[in-house]
Image (cartoon, rainbow, N blue to C red; front, side, top):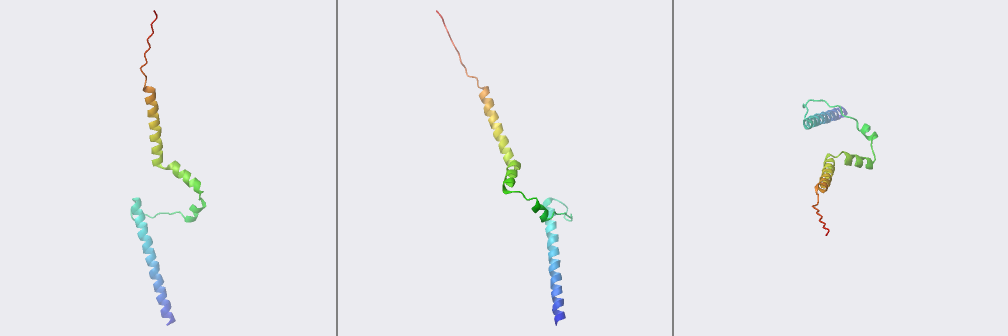
Length: 104
């Protein structure tokens, strides 16, 4: 009876292992598809420990996000362009001033 229970447990664990391997294979294929790679591409993923060692402070992440956000860069460039246009319009405007003097 013990041998039968051990064999059933072994088969159950093998089934769980195969299910996990199938899930890993499916997730790898989904990632390859999302990245536009062939579905059988093997990826060399970095360990999580390597990323945790290079952790930055919250302020550093915020600064990097603000500096490297392309939408914010575009907004800053648009603002700079608008300021330059206002300045050019001010220089372009020449008031019409006339002076008349007469001595008799």
